[in-house]
Length: 503
Image (tube, helix red, strand yellow):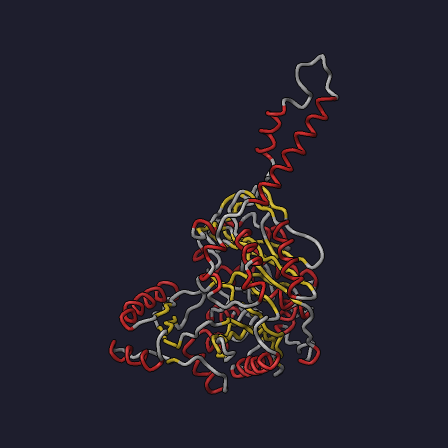
């Protein structure tokens, strides 16, 4: 039985995993780089150990050090979270070789689904619909051009070992094909150490829809319904929701059936996500499978009531799934927004720095998965994600209004954030209508990034007037034999206010 888990990650996902461990009575071990020494996951876990310097190559990607700490701390298992080593076959194998439990699928499943070209081939055999394209590219330029003409422009070039938008190029004409291919190979080689690239048909007005699956070691596989992930910028998700406002009940059933078939084809175990592209005519195609916990898993938890991290740990304990498919019900509507330390008005440049003030939203149907606090300095070495804001309501319309309210309450100073950007998304008519696809942000970027400080200005004025009124009341009670009020002059206090007050 698992009694102690080392979380081989950082930030909000490390805190999230430790929370489930605590509820299960399982002790937790955090690891940290020098840049994360005071991070919340270090404070929250039962034990914490230094990995190394700030660069991830010397800390969160250091397999030897992570396994060494797991043994030193007498951990039974390692949870990889997402990113870093979560889909690294060598890491999964090394954990097992060290006599520890890997909270995730088998190394064989990670390998099979980690290479996009291999996955395409496996899905064909499993009867899963794939995007028209090729499993590998010919060597000669002319043969590559011929293949693109057969598929039909536009085409998408994708890194075989890729993810997160790296090594991807949209090609609309033959003259751009070879230059784009060279750039895609170069980026793939730098990002993944593998320059293999494949080609597939680019779908017009596509939706990015993924199905959450859970599988145990006893042959049981279930799905936890879909997530709509089409609000993306540079192939990175910004807002996700469930259920999707686009797909029909019939389409949901068909996609779910193929998602389960995909998982069974590689004897999958644990939590995973089967991703699809759906065109404007609701034809769907397998995109890839993520063999790990997804960033956006909380919205699935919210509508199903299932703690996915706990389910992962139980499966790693060799326990059978506690739920059958007909017992899993989707209730209400949930939306997640990723809150980043970045400046949308300045080309979304990262904004690391000191958090001077933070007020997180509260209230019915609101959940915040974060890891920062006042006085914490967001490092420049990692993804600038601050938190994930999750809301739930009985209907989609109510969920959107609740998200607007939660974003209004969310206050962070010291760094730039994308909170106003997400507010603009919630107010954009295509999103409100549920009539959007993966081009939504690109098509409305000027509208979404337009600075809007009207609410901030009204808040500032109200706060200033209230403070000055307070000072006037203090002055009425002052000792008139003195030249100055006990609290000092209004202007001095006004200055103090703006040195210490976040608004």
